[in-house]
Structure formats: structure tokens, C-alpha cells
Length: 176
Image 1 (cartoon, one colour):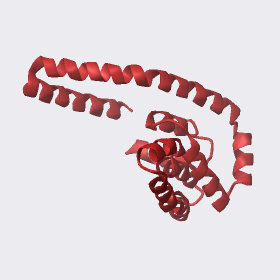
Image 2 (cartoon, helix red, strand yellow):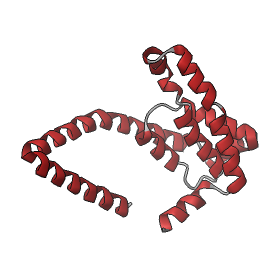
Image 3 (cartoon, rainbow, N blue to C red):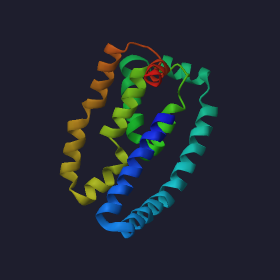
């Protein structure tokens, strides 16, 4: 976590330096103004997401998760996880803290991976926007083309990372 913050700080300082060299203090303050506008729009969503995540962590006890995994294991679990990902509202600032909340709960990696790919591949919440801005036919075509992708990616991840809990892979990543 400290490396991530340090990396973002370095990138921020480089970008501010480039803005200052390119357009002076006016460009820097304009960028900071845009950043504060974005933050003011995102903070309420992030707070609401953390409230939902906290409640889900209390409701989804290890026993409930174990029962769901027994009911939806294998390819049924991959399909269920992919569709659930597609139905989850919000952007990455809601999705990834939600997923981190499942650390240590024993959920197989392939189910969380299917969830993430389902969110990015399906994202049913953007369907009305696609229909209104592009066309219903193209939106339907895009969804039909991407329909098997989260399921296939879940099957592949199950093949290469069999039944290991997702926390194992997170811990390996954190060590590096």
C-alpha cells in the first residue's frame, strides 16, 4: 500500500511539474480545480460503497459464503459470478474495495476473477446508455459477442489456478 501511494505521489509531482512548465501556475490551479470537482463527485459514492461493503461483510459470514459456494460451485458458480459482476453498479473505486472485503473468506480465485471480468465485460448498468447513444442493435451485438468471455475466462482461471482461495494470490502479490 505504501508503494502505491508513493508511486501516485511521484506521478502527481511529475504531472504538476509538466503542467507548471507548460502553462505556469494557472494550468496547475486549473488541474487542481478539476481534481477537486472529481473528488467532490466521487467521495459520496465511495462513502456509500464502503457502507454497503461493511454491511455485506457482516451479512456474508463464512458459513453463508460456504453454503453459496457449495450451491454454486464449478461452472454454475462461474456463470453466477459473471452475471453478478455484470449487475454490480459503480466503477472501480466501488468494485475493488468490495472484492478486497472477501479476502480471507476462502472464495476461490476463479470466482472472483469471473466476477471482475463479468463486471467489465457485461456491465449491465451501462446498457441504457449504450442503447440511447449508439443504437439498440449495436448494444445487443456487443453484449452477444462478449457473452461467453467472462465464463470462458473463469473456466481458464479455474484450470490454471484450481480452487485456491483468492487470498493466497493476493498475499503472493503483496510480497512482491
